[in-house]
Length: 444
Image (cartoon, rainbow, N blue to C red; front, side):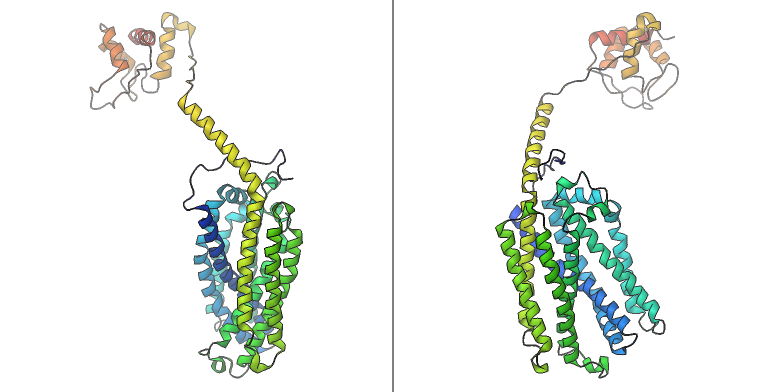
């Protein structure tokens, strides 16, 4: 249950949003969709390049195909990083407490994202620019890409685990790190659906990439692959990815915890699913159709996939909103109560009584000695210069001027250039000043 007694309900950050909430939500959905397209191309492209290069060990045509796909990964990677800034800032602003709580609970895995990204990016550049240098060491070259693919597959799993965890604050008390959060409902189906989407989007991208009029197919492949064969290969890759996405999308729908579900969420997800099936159907028709008609359904596929992404992204945001709604209400109430109490305390401060450490062995000056230690001991010692002059010097100066000593303690000025300005002690009562003066003047 959402409202279980041990569920953490922290106070919210009492700061206004930088933009209206509706605008921030729209920015989050749109910017994330742009970001995820290039994430799909980066991850899917690396998977396809690795598959093609392994296949190229026996069929040289695929080795060149892997080379061509590999060239696109670094470009798509750069666009993915740049386009990731807006959704990251938006989700931080909208769900600050939830996002950072999830980050803290996944601990080392979240911290490792930056170094893992750097390593993976360097490996893709190494793979790209050592193609000729390692031409006779194909297995080593493949190994470089295999490590990059493994990292590329792990990084989205960390992000997805965090975003999933932030929607379930009732689980925060039982999660014990990344691997614990990894076992929460819906993580793995969503992750496998993401992998399918990455391969599917990459397949459609490769159809467009190889179909460009200025793309020199004959020069690159020397007749080993025709433009039609490259497009058909792209559609085949897309069909595999879309099939996986449809399969795991159904599993995602049935494994989503019910607390965020509603007819509106189910309805939008249903429409999104039909669009995905439509894209898969037209992809299949492109594969089995006549060679001269291979481009007939391409625009329909692209439109279906784009509308699917908008619908699916909207349904995910709606589910997130519903999942956190009751918890946000509780947090708003706790924040309001905290701010009210904080205001009351500020307006009615309670002064703490300081307990004096009195040494009875000092007799009549024991009280003054305790007050001196509490207020003056940090700057003055008996016969040694500290921040201020020693007590023996003060006693000598004011030996016959007790009133002058009391006035100086209460509101001191600055007499000596080699000593800092002494702060005043207006909070000391007349009785306290008398006791301190008696103590200072007793020093010999």
